[in-house]
Image (cartoon, rainbow, N blue to C red; front, top):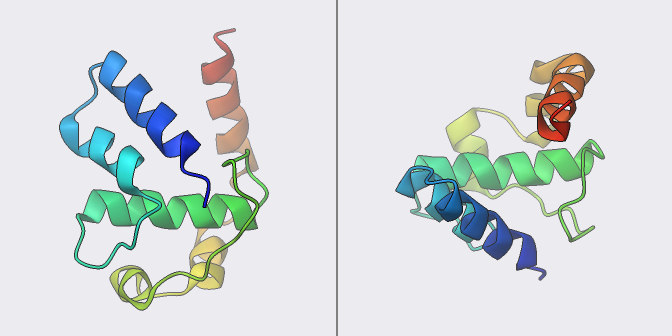
Length: 102
């Protein structure tokens, strides 16, 4: 498993002085999520969904099935979560514009 992006994300979050729960979520979203915080659960689910939707590059092409506790927390599997997002392309474009600093 490639955890490089998790460590880099956590380091950036620390540098940017983001809240500790965000830093921990970025650092630990690749580990088994059972019993972990809701923030880590959300980031882990978002990571897998982004890979399924070909949004960005997470460092690992492997798409893991969402664990049952995540499915239970969201009330749906990844397909249902993706359906609930609708057309998010505009939001992705806004985020990319923000990140680019233009």
